[in-house]
Image (cartoon, protein in one colour):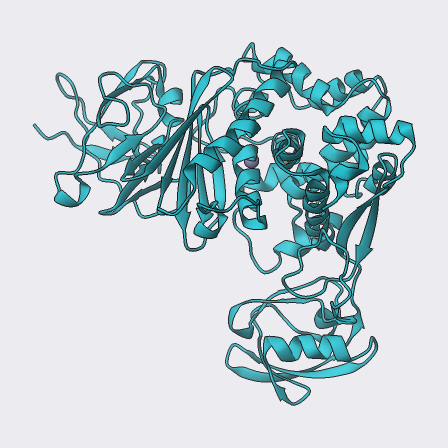
Length: 547
Ligand code: ZN
């Protein structure tokens, strides 16, 4: 017998009283290629629990049984299933019955279905599987071997000694390769990753190019979250209130420390050289220094506003919003280096303390706990540090700290629009001398106009489309030529379409800003500095710093 359902409020339905069990049938629209919701077509299916599983109010704590059936179609006859949802009858990588102890667990094991490639490795006594969907050329053996080193390092970091056991029996990397896309989402025993096919290691190659390095950094980041966010987590998330946003100013600690360790693990486990790591760090510093919003919004406020700002960028985002991930990872770097300067402790000790106090016993982290614990680990009051760099908008003073580790930080202008930083200028580079202070998007449309820039002062706006510069038909080449050949103080006439109206502006050029960072290593450091640097980067000797 049909039972009437009424929606009240937007995320709940009320059923009329009925006798016996109530069966609810729901059809889900699944067409999101991101790691956040669900996707289904004739070649692949993927879903996160919260996108598809209804929860009867008051039944959050009872066990759930899930039957996942393959599609009755020839196109899907070779499909397999990859999830860390505990099996309750389903064969390994096959369709069938799964179970979860409660709704919280049911939500946290996304399911990948399709004809994916599969590789496995062991780390910390746990089986780790990698599924790759969307690419057949990937060198899966190499990906597995590289991730094995990264995972073993993370396990030992939290365990505090070599050859520790992972806090789970099984872990799964669900990787989707696409033409263009990048991102990841962490879960308690798995992570969902989206990357470009270029990010995958190709069979027959042995070097780690920048694209593959990005993927290793992403996987390392999400894996670190298995401790720092999935097990050590803010008090307001224990339990999650699924009906509303869980507000916290602590995301910087969970995201930023994770971002810092995501890259650091790659050098500490020996996968990349210290020189390569310092190049990565230079790129992170560049990203932060180019974000004008860092002087407007604190890392703590950015954490709080993550629900409404971080994933909904608009043309004003670079002016008003700081990336708590990127800037926060520099706060984590500063904290680590300060701790290491004492010669007694490091951020590793703080992570192990957090793990012991909150992660292992499953207790939420109170809002003020991390600054307090960090002060305890350091043996000095860090209130001023957190007030200035986390609650406030000051940039952490990393240059003098890095210098104490025999690493010099330099800033220079960008060479061109694709220059992400991390390297010194080469002899044949021809960096622009001037800047407009605007970011070009597709089709010569202005994506961003930066605060207090020549473009803003002249009256240009985001979404204006360039038509001509100094009487020449606009193109990316013409823009770059003007910035290279003209001098600061020169005026450039710019014609744009603002919606359908032609407008003319006079922009007075400024010097190109020194917003691009690179790091140089002292190749003959004192014994003390060399030892400190070796302890930080897990290796010593000037040899290891050669690119
Ligand atoms: Zn993250």
